[in-house]
Length: 115
Length: 108
Image 1 (cartoon, rainbow over the protein chains, first blue to last red):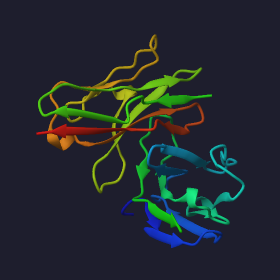
Image 2 (tube, each protein chain N blue to C red):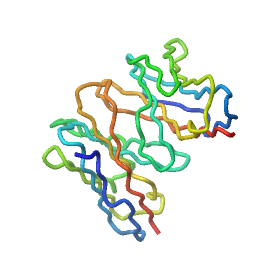
Image 3 (cartoon, rainbow over the protein chains, first blue to last red):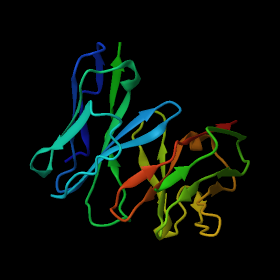
Image 4 (cartoon, chains in turn green, blue):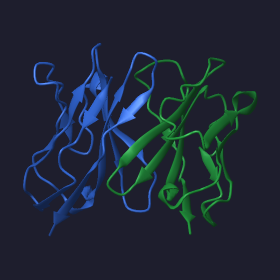
């Protein structure tokens, strides 16, 4: 494929609404990451999927955040009852998942604005 | 727990001046470190990784285990180096943790 694809590229929502962000990783990549990028906070780790292993959810900021990865490919990040502080760019990345030395391939992100 | 610290939010230099972007890490195991870069309106991408010991676009980074540092250096900055730079550490589960980033501004 062309690379990691994220949709939508921009999402404007009202406070209290739920949103779903989608990530299509590079075909064959077993590792998939979600990060949140905001001014002053840098790149904040959210969740990490590696093959069939249980995901590492240690970065999810609250129980309003969840993510799943269906069939080892597409992933969806869901934010329930959005708050204004959730406004940020949500980045997805994937890698082959063969070792610590690999580089991550990033998507172009979803800009989320909560009004 | 592992942590990556980039103490400078913004670094401004003139073209031709040397650049050093600081990165310190905290990790109990053997670290695997990276520098990623995001140019304006482009995707975040790998610049270089510790294991490769390479020089990319004139940038180098040396792992100093004694000082737990992995500073990024370039002897002569160019305007096209202006970007956001992130230091990152991969732990034993391959999870990649990033620092808060440093914005490099190279002035003409």
